[in-house]
Length: 368
Image 1 (tube, helix red, strand yellow):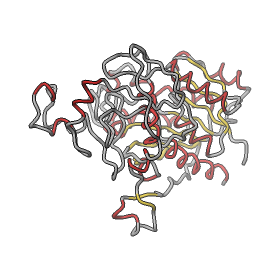
Image 2 (cartoon, rainbow, N blue to C red):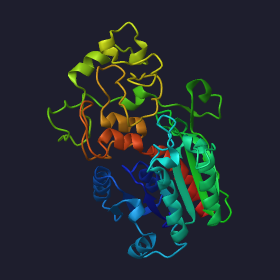
Image 3 (cartoon, one colour):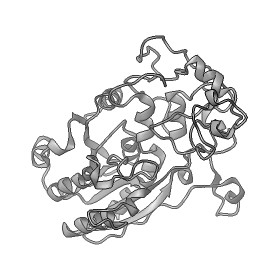
Image 4 (cartoon, rainbow, N blue to C red):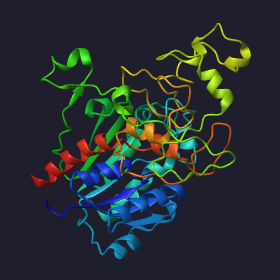
């Protein structure tokens, strides 16, 4: 492969980076503010005996010109700049504060780096709520239009598409908008789907059926028990059960494939104020379907056992390889952890197989 180089912004736990590396790119630097994510990233570099520089820093305080000097780069030499900025300001499941959220303007930091580095390709992942996010004038779609317009001002031609991770072999229904901007003209073509719903798979060009929760979790075995009074664990693979005993009793009332709020026959004490409309909260996954979108605010129930999913099971549902190690705390649902615990590191990240599918097409574009 040609020596294509990349820089990662908002690197998180490195899900997007795994896909980019698997597609043949060498990542020169990863920039991330969360200390636990940086521990995970550094452990990955050490395990691979790589040379990627991990910068634990607020992206707003990083000078792209200084970064270029450290990496011995000149403008237009970098092949790929990529990242998934914080999605909470634009998430349809959140408060949708858009640019009024302190994290909202972080999306535009990508433009500052791009204007200096002038990479051949920019690859951005974001929640699809970005497409309808309101700006200063209160008009839907204003933020996205502004971002696209700013890309065009610095001579980039953008294309975008909503991609579902399940279509690329991830056992999870997770839709995100992918933006690919190329310097000058844009001949990029998004990858074709490799998977489809079971009832359609054989009809659509012999695609494989969606991977299911049951397939993803198969073979993991019994998780380690939670160690009382701590958020850190000696078990390296993160297959650790953090379920409080009271929650295990509550989970036992939820049939596979349903959610706690739908069990209206239960007492108010068990339902904890949930309403029937709370269809995504406290969900027990079904073995026969892909998972719902993993989110930071909650952890899904195991399909057959009366417990929450472990971080390793979350990684399986996100498409991580089993040799990838997370560092940082595993939070009990009754406690709090500053910065990102392991479940949230996964839920915030880009599924590696989706990142690979996109990055592989970027590499083909650069080859041509």
